[in-house]
Length: 372
Image: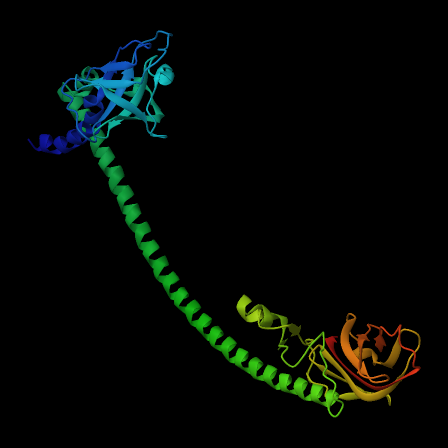
């Protein structure tokens, strides 16, 4: 009795595993050239969700010339066959699939048989009723052997379960460690965001101060002359970003769009603002803030040489990394606009004087901003 109680659940597991193959395995001997397929499966009841494996045994080679494929299992009625992958009706053009001992799975959706077209089963691995009965032990020695096999299987499964339990504990420990690491990451990220917010506020304040200085210097250029400088390069409303490249990269694209120019310092720069310095005696002043170079002069006289008039030459350490343009006005014959050029060799000059006849240009005002 004890042995039967031990063996019973194992046999039931085998039966439950094999039973679906026994009860859903139908055979159809319908000729290949007939679109209405008939399959035999004793005890089959048709209902939504029913599954059936059908083996098509006909080996003829003639295909039908018209019609749609239907399937009638155990006289439950001919139902249209649809292809699972496309939901299209299976036609006579697919007839070559239902022959030559091929086995396919069909699922009934309540209206049609759905052909699982991408699954071709091997008829040799399917089990018939007689084959299943032959698997049932018929003698004491066979039962003893089967019980021994089940006992070995149980031991192996218990070992696997123990191993999986240990792995689950290790995984739980790892997840806990990752959770702690994530908390530290979140804390560091919040601290960094706070630092960036503070730095951005400081930069905004710095920009407002510089904007005011630019406005003051433009007022100096036009004071008492009645000339409005429409500078093509920069004006008091221009926003300049002062900071390192790494600080610039930390800004969002929306924040970057608020700036017209970028001025980043050298790594070894200690004093970021040189203050206004004068070149020679011409009255030209220059100033470096980080890498930004400001040029201004007002109410000076310049000697013209052809189409250009050289104002001054900047010292080596204040020469720009590329030519940039500014605006200049002079009043030899009323207010006249010229282009102010700051060259990489340090030369500051006026261009566009082809139609000027005066040798000396008087009351000249100029302003430009570029990068060193």
